[in-house]
Amino acid sequence: MSDKTKRTNQCQLQRKYLCKPQILPQFLKKGMSVSDLVDVFSHSGAFNAGRLAEACKLYCHMLSKDVTVGVTLSGAMTPTGMGGTLISLMEKGFVDFIISTGANLYHDLHFALNLPIHQGDFRVDDTELYHAGIERIYDIFITDELLLKTDKFIQDVTKGFSNTEPISTADFHYQLGKAVLSETSSPQLSFVAQAAKYNVPVFVSSPGDSSIGMNLSYLKLQGNNLVIDTDIDVIQSTAIVFNSKLNGVVSIGGGSPKNFYMQTQPTLAQILDINKGGHDYFIQITTDAPQWGGLSGATPSEAISWGKMRIEEIKNHVVVYCDATIATPILASYALSKAKARKKKHLYKQLPQYVNELKKHVKK
Image 1: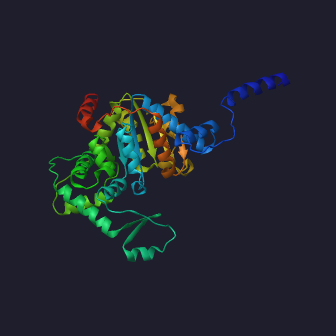
Image 2: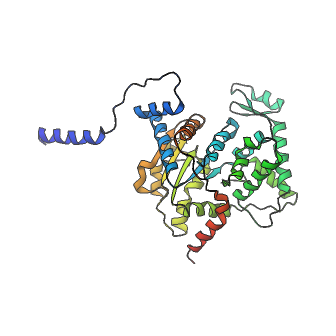
Image 3: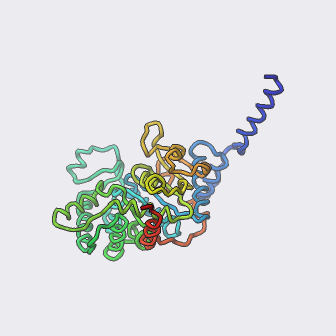
């Protein structure tokens, strides 16, 4: 290869790879807002500050389009106060449905019941905590009394439900949220209650794997006839995706809730032979890495191979490797300051119609 050809190839490659803006020093000023800081991150575009800025701008882009936005919530985020972030987003129409672990819903109820969750410390004697009747979630303390009072609330309100047919977790949590709205002193602090208020469906992908599931099993041993059918969850969540013009997710953490959202596309394409081409937008905040093979660290690129993500929309995928308690409030704050409020979709009220539309397209 001649020197001239090498120089030509080098110039072509440099034009390809050096097309983004130059990185400049990050100058911070007194009185900067969260959105100002994100814009600084965007100008540098480096490491996970850069990815967080990309996620913030992508979320705002999603909110400017007719995108059905799902939020998946893993772990036990609500004891940190994250339920308030979800409420703020739902109030503006920025969240259309939620898929969560049961733990997030259970601990959310403490706030509505005015049962205190305390800041604690991870450098403690856990044996002493056990004898004191205190449970630890890393650096958060809750008490036996708090748990038992929450259990009693769940049991008491569930006994009043009059369902004669199996229901989905979204149906159950809607009824639970309505009970929180009418029977607790601080329903404004509960995202379960506010989801019911705004008709935002809340699914739990593994309902038995939580204190709510434990309480429902206790009631069943007492003869309660309430039946939660997770097949209905699969149908309802898939129906939401099927009936939506565009689909996108903000996945906080990963885990089972993330997969439950992602599997809606293979349910359509692989099982029902209805190929929508994959989800359109994907934002994930995680501390997991892809090389361990777990779902929490699986990248959107890997999801393309399963038909879960749209092939041509790689620019609409962002993974932020960061503690969710840091990145999620920044993402939400940026959206609340930059994006216009959206008309709420009230998807819970649409579920029967959506399921019927899906049934019409199922091949016999």
